[in-house]
Image (cartoon, rainbow, N blue to C red; front, side):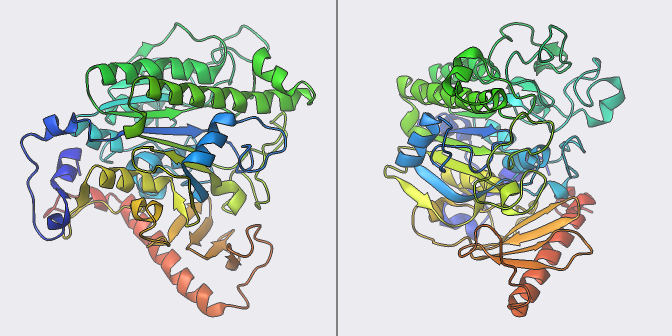
Length: 476
């Protein structure tokens, strides 16, 4: 299904649920209206649930994120689409679980051209679209051997953001050091991953110092230009911090001078990221568009843990870390600032996740999928009613799978099978956030019901993986 096919399956208002409504000829003009919200998706890389001041970290300094948490929408149960980076990124812009289109893990698969992205849809609606930072949904060059898979040997995985609806790009295939991103840490040798702005267009200027600042140096002019042209904008800002190689500059290391060197770098690069969130918020206010901008923030998975990291991030009291479907691997900081729509501090207790961005943004624009139309299955839901207090619970459970792990999360319980041969485990997340007490033996009926739902959802993903979702209406 193309983005044009998708747009044909959109309608406005309640009438769209019962009748086919053609999009107005003035759609492009309407899209440029100031009534349409701007959308920014910010995301940290490997930032744990506990790696913010507002979630109780005893040392870290994240004043910008803390201010959003105090004054805007704070999600207490926000879930990354996967316990590793690439799959989560796919869920953010498609609204679909990555097992539907073959991005099973980091550096595995690439975003198929048939997938409809949020950038494509918003581009059709007249938005300026930009991607800044880590892409990790395919390679970015066919000619230069670089990063994890880029170059002549990885052409089959070539799937850059500019072929998925993004008009302006400043993107890397995968990770880079969080300070002096083009250099191997401790040397002047090239790191081997580059920023790209288009087909075979390697960026060579303004690449020294803090990587989060370097990324925002590109995002801010993009936003200024869109505002100057009176166009709504969609900006995806995917920071590399605090993914390894974890480095902070002198200014941010100094904030943690009483900490061991490794902690100075880890905590420092998160504070550097926070500075750029503050810069972005200030810029939106200076441009006069903050009220009408949806500014989202989350992490792509839980914190790294292991010998490669100078210090481990914090999952707080949650069980597990990156690569695990226990809470510590997928429950992450989640925030939304949209002053024109949510004027009071709001805390959301219902489970929400990165797959919800797509349907929520579409709904915020006044569109909805029309009943009876053949569209690709979406795993996300519109969470505006939850944020507005019209709905207290998530209407559908949330499925997760990764490397043999399978989980289903509803408003109270979480069912998880850590390995295919292992029995199901059941946790009451409202009473046991640390997943310390397995209730499977005590509640067999709950296990049976949720297991049926989980396996049905898993089978749906497997069907999608065959390409069945891409068939045109009336075709095969």
